Length: 124
Image 1 (cartoon, rainbow, N blue to C red):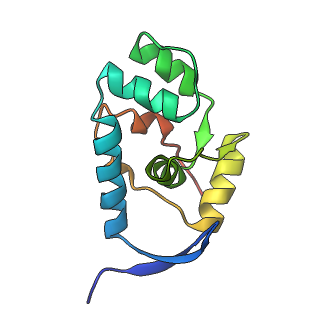
Image 2 (image 1 turned 30 degrees about the horizontal axis):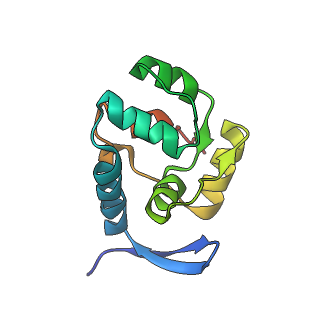
């Protein structure tokens, strides 16, 4: 038995992704943004499209409070140097995530990582 596979719809077509792809996504994250220093937070804010300079992690957290983006799509956008898709609210993000099955396991996100601030609980 190999890793479980499933189909994922993307803008370029249907792609077969394995569970190990999530680990690769996390490796992209660590390579690009590190593990949680202020500079890592500032890099993430720039990748999200913020132009202002944030002087503390708390300022970043406050700015991210109402940012709704799918983590899998965000990591793909970072890897391909494109802009991520933003949602107007939590409910649109939840509907998109459930429909497209683009979940990212919270257990893979290191504590203190800026990526945790993008994590949203999707309850079905």
